[in-house]
Amino acid sequence: MTHGVINWLLTACFVLAAPAITLAQQVDVKVTEGEVIADSLSGAPGDPARGRLIILSRQSGLCILCHSGPFPEERFQGNLAPDLAISAARLSPEQLRARIVDASRFNPNTIMPPYFKKNHGSRIGSQFADKTILTAQEIEDVVAFLVSLKP
Image 1: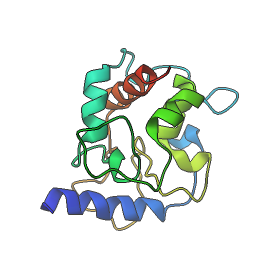
Image 2: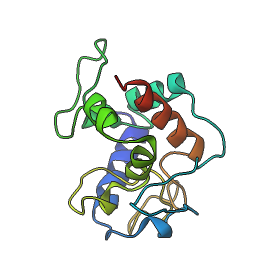
Image 3: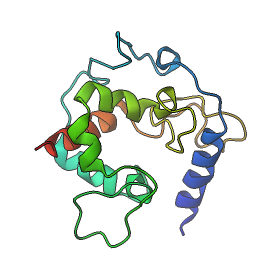
Image 4: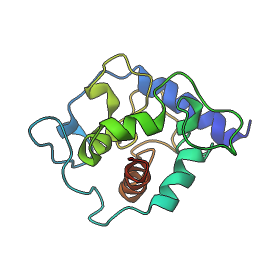
């Protein structure tokens, strides 16, 4: 494993130890009734092709560490979390966005890290301090890809 991947995994582990917080305490995220994030985080539409790359990336999104999906070219996909196509089929884009921002809001025992939260908890490497795992546009790209999976 590369040093960057190890640092990211350590960060993800420390994030899991952080207490659950409301979406309103995230990075300037507007929460609406029903715990969805209705508006684009970046103000721009997402790019499904970039979203797919983020999901498959073992350096940034790391989604397939836990999730599986319609990626026949990927040999090692996770089985700890729902298949991404199933999640995409049952959730709206606004619900998907909210879960990517901070899944612990919906399941306090989740192992999914909050991808759009600056305060990851304690003992975070200085290169990760005050930074989100994914940018606002990367979140929108992932949402766009997941929406593209809907039947």
